[in-house]
Amino acid sequence: MRTAYSVETVRAAERELMARLPEGALMARAAAGLAAVCAGLLGRVYGSRVVVLAGPGDNGGDALYAGARLARRGARVTAVPMDPQRIHPGGLAALRAAGGRVEASVPRRADLVLDGLLGIGGRGGLRPAAAALAERVRADALVVAVDLPSGVDADTGEVTGPAVTADVTVTFGAYKPGLLVDPGASRVGAVRLVDIGLDLAEPVLEALQHADVARLLPVPTASSDKYRRGVVGVVAGSEQYPGAAVLAVAGALRGGAGAVRYVGPAADAVLARYPEVLVGRGRVQAWVVGPGIGAGRAAEVGRALADRDVPVLVDADGLRGLDPEVVRGRRAATLLTPHAGEAAALLGVPRESVEAGRLAAVRELAERYGAAVLLKGSTTLVAPAGGGAVRVNPTGTPWLATAGSGDVLSGLAGALLAGGLPGADAGSVAAYLHGLAGRLAADGAPVVAQEVAAALPAAWRDVIS
Ligand SMILES: NC(=O)C1=CN([C@@H]2O[C@H](COP(=O)(O)OP(=O)(O)OC[C@H]3O[C@@H](n4cnc5c(N)ncnc54)[C@H](OP(=O)(O)O)[C@@H]3O)[C@@H](O)[C@H]2O)[C@@H](O)CC1
Ligand SMILES: Nc1ncnc2c1ncn2[C@@H]1O[C@H](COP(=O)(O)OP(=O)(O)O)[C@@H](O)[C@H]1O
Ligand SMILES: [K+]
Image (tube, rainbow, N blue to C red; front, side, top):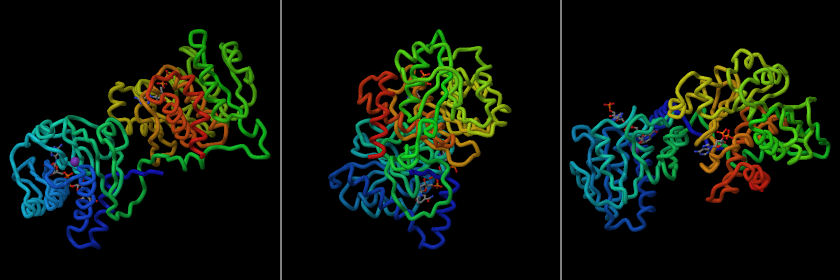
C-alpha cells in the first residue's frame, strides 16, 4: 500500500524527530536526497547550469542547500530569490560558500530548475512575485519540484492560481495527498520519495498496489458453488440505452460473480451477448442499480435499497434524487459511484467545484450518505462509509473516458460486493482492475468499453502473477 499523510501529521513527525537530532540535520538529509536525484537527472553535474528558485521558507532552504551540493560538484548554480529580504540564511550562505551566485532575475539558459518556492507551508496559488518567477522557467529545462510543485495544495491537490508544472518531484519523508490527487497530481511528473526518517501516524490517503489487490480478490475454493461465489443482480439499461445493460453485465461476469441476474427491459440484448445470464428477480448477494436506466425509475432504485441486508451499488441515473436517510438506514454496504457531474448534483454545487476539490467532495458525500463513495474521473477516489483514509486509484488512463466504461466498472464492483468485499474495498479493487484493463486494452490507442471488459481477465492475471 502506498500511503500519503496530511501536512499536520508530517509536521508532528518532523517536530518529534528534530527534537532528537542536531539542528539542521533533517534539512541536510532532504537536501542530500534532492541533490542526488538532480545529479542523476543531469548525468554530468560538472559544467551544468542549475537555477534555484528560492522561496522565503524552509522549502527554499532545501533547494539552496541542494544547489550548494551541486555547485561543489562543478555545476554553475544561480539562485533567484522570490523575496530578497526573506531568503533562508543558512542555505544562502552554503550556496555562496560553494561558489553559487544570486541574481534578481531568472537566467536565460538552464539545464535544470529547482522549484524551491513553496512547500507544505504554501497557501493558495502563487502570489504575483512567485508566479512571475515560475512563469519565466524555460520549457526546455528540466523542472524539479522540491517537496511539491509550488502552487499545489499539499493536503488536497487543489490548484487555485498559478502553479509550477514539474518533470520530477522530490518529496521528503512522506507522500502528500496533493501529489496523488488531481489537479495537483497532473503537475508533479515522476515522484521520488526521499526517506528522512520520519515516524508517521495514520495516513489520510492510500493507493492499492498489486499485492494489496491480489490479497483482496475473492477466489473460489474447492467448496465454492455459484451461490457462494455470489450472484449479482443488475438493474440497468432501458429501451433508449440497452447497451448499458450489456456492459454492466459484462463487468459483473468478468468480476468473478457466480451468476448474474438481469432485471430490466434489455433482456434480449443481454441474452444475445451472454446466454449465461439469468433473467428476472430472485435472490442475489448484491445489486447494481442505475447504469442506463434513464429518468423516472426511482421506484426500482428504492426497491433495491429497501433490501437492507443486501449490498447495493448505485450508479448513474440511479443516483438522481437519492435520499441520504434511506441510504443511512441500510445495514449492508452501499457503494455510490458518481462521476463529477453526478457528484455535483448530489451535493448541489457546480461540477467545476467537485473537479477542483475532489477529496473534499468524495469525503462530503460519504459522510452525508453514510456510504462508501467512488468518485470517477482522472484520479478516481474511494471514500469509506465511516470516515478514514480515502483510496486513490493509481492505475487507469484517460482512454477510459469513453462511453460505457463506467457501466463496466459498476458491474465489476457489484461482483466484488457479491463476493463479500466491503464497499470501499469493492470500489477500490474494481477501479484498480478497470484501470489496468483500460491500459492493457488501449495500449496507447483508443479503446471501447467492451474491450475494457474483455481485458479484465488479463488485468486479474497480471495482479495475481
Ligand atoms: N516537514 C518536514 O519534515 C521537513 C520539511 N522540510 C522542508 O520545509 C518545507 C516547509 O517549510 P516552511 O514551513 O518554511 O514553509 P514553505 O513551504 O517554505 O513556505 C512558507 C513560506 O511561503 C510563504 N507563502 C505561503 N503561501 C504563499 C503563496 N501562495 N505565495 C507566496 N508565498 C507564500 C509564506 O509566507 P507568509 O504567508 O508567511 O507571508 C512562508 O514564508 C517543506 O515543504 C520541505 O521542503 C525539509 O527541509 C525537512 C523536513
Ligand atoms: N481523464 C480520465 N482519466 C482516467 N480515467 C477517466 C478519465 N475520465 C473518465 N475516466 C474513467 O472513465 C470511466 C467513465 O465512466 P462514466 O463517466 O460513468 O461514463 P459512462 O457513463 O459513459 O460509462 C470511469 O471509470 C472514469 O473514472
Ligand atoms: K516547491
